[in-house]
Image (cartoon, rainbow, N blue to C red):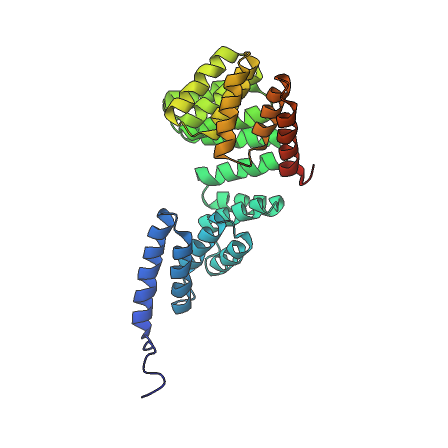
Length: 292
């Protein structure tokens, strides 16, 4: 018996091209299903069969980026761009990978190049705005958000994203206005209710904050952020038992929720449950700084 009898026969060039094409297509469905390891496996085989297909490199880079393998993603995007230098998609995605690694200036260069190719690409504009905010260039970030909203005022997320930036800048009234616009577009937008509730809490409008957070939790009972925020509101309104119940649930949903530990610690301290308060403050310190 020949040693190579169980080996797969070598494919002709036409067959290799055909198989690689189907693998790329299947990988796109895997990506849509968030099955990124399966997508990477298909794309790796596709690249082995047809190494000069820019789409395969770009898709694999995107899967690597989504599952936070940023260096692998950069390598793939570099190859995609070598094959197809004016791919706005690859440039925008590589910019996102750079931003995730804290390489903000390189990210900005990619976003700027991508926007010369696709000046009305909303996701690239949003990525650029996020990077500008990370660089502390908040007024420029707001300008990008204004461009995004001007392109399509009927996208709830665009209003919410600018609202979150306003909130980051402690401009709570402006944030509330944007969250309200988001809810006009999408009346059951959980994140907008949650974020507006938090902004209302920050300016001591507790009854309105509670109403928004109640609605967010009605729509999504396991929303840990809304539960944490409602716990803080209930504490401000004098309901410490209700606050602890919400904060317990928020921490049960996310054991690394630093802010919830801090708030629950303060509530427990007010209730003179000091041993439990110490445990919460210690956990918060461990999570945020790596030691108490």
